[in-house]
Length: 467
Image (spheres, rainbow, N blue to C red):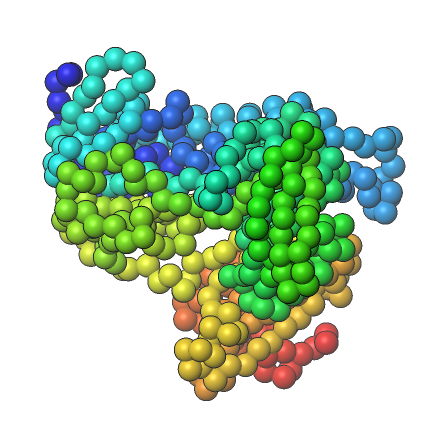
């Protein structure tokens, strides 16, 4: 066993939660180590999650735009998907981002240790590399940021060819003729949006009664129409009874209030959610408590073991990279006694990078009513906007949820082009406790998609100009 080193903070996991926590802790003057079991820094988000998925989505966007170029006055020859070139583009993006994370560690004097990190009781972390001696670190505090892994249906086994998770779906060497996607949350909808534009026949299966079930009901309803319009066979309120691999693909027996059916596809993508990775982390050597597999934490991200903090996908908060980063900063500041402001989880944006995009922040109309608000709603469609027509937007709208008594803005919900970029205005407005009136008094540049935000605010007050 190698000689131990001593640190103020040791972070286990280098995803967007872990590496941000490490940087913030270093900025606060602490001696920091970060432990990563994989070959490169960045975690699931960078290597097999957010970043490569969005790279494939961008390829699908470019492919679709090129095919429709004549509409915009651009003529080209035959447009085809070059899968090897796409994978090179994807890996180049990942490589450059990983190098950026590595640079940030060096810039902030953070010690990077390669290997599997495991708690050995309070104040000790064992690092077991793939080869070489095991090392034990002495550390005053630990931030656990070990992330999540794909959930699978009971009895389902991934083979990388017929049965896939999102990880394997990023690496396919050819586009399957048909794909069944289980789960119509953000991951399932994004991959359905990718592969239908790549040329696969896609069937999307969701047990709950609507797609994107955490979104506002009107957004979900419009998204269902948009997916069907793009040729995706969407089955909501449908339960999977059995998955059977066969010689040329997979058969899925499903049932709904319409009866039973057997779906056939060349591949099946299981996108039914993710589970926290808390096994083999050494929690049994501490007083850290779990709840349904998640680490129990307080508002400062402190676990039931006072010197151990947990952030990101292993705590019972939304599994979002941007939220993990903020939780990492809260944990780092709590360690030095700064008493940071707790995160307002109502103000965490959701983003689905599909075609069309969906983004939201704040309360849905139903949630606002459930909390006792006297709700008013304002909506404005995106296609009639000047920029909407320029982009040939076929559907989409901005929906604002407000409180009638105080004119408080409660929620912003967007479906349409660049929704995931537009949502930042809504997040800022909520953080600043904006009224709806203040939102429409802010002058939005013309012609932009953001004009829909101001128009929706006017509509909520019954003063719509372009409706």
